[in-house]
Image: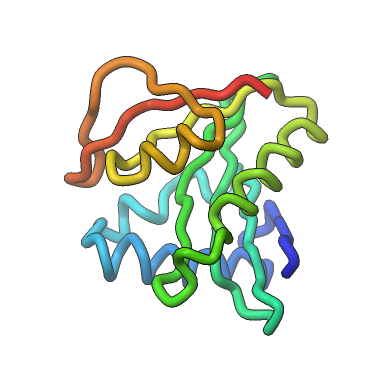
Length: 144
């Protein structure tokens, strides 16, 4: 297993990230493509976890909000690879990258179905639920 990241939207790593995001968010969850692929793509760090067979199986992106906070977004694990701990491994690597880059906090909008996943990783719910792309979310934060 390996994790690669890029900020380049012409990179094969970015293409792999988009493939997973399209499968999970657009095809499975019905998120409109114009919401899923947005104007921030070239400002983000795109992380992709590759299986031992060198297949892209999980992705997330980190959007810099200011010089100390990143927003973790577009966290997705392809359907056939769920339940194999890839999501947890990817989040830990994203946190390590954030620390390496000098950030001290990650914030995210967690789908309600994923709240327990993020809570186990040390994220804390903030405020009220909100709806994004017709899916209920909660803001969650973690100091690094």
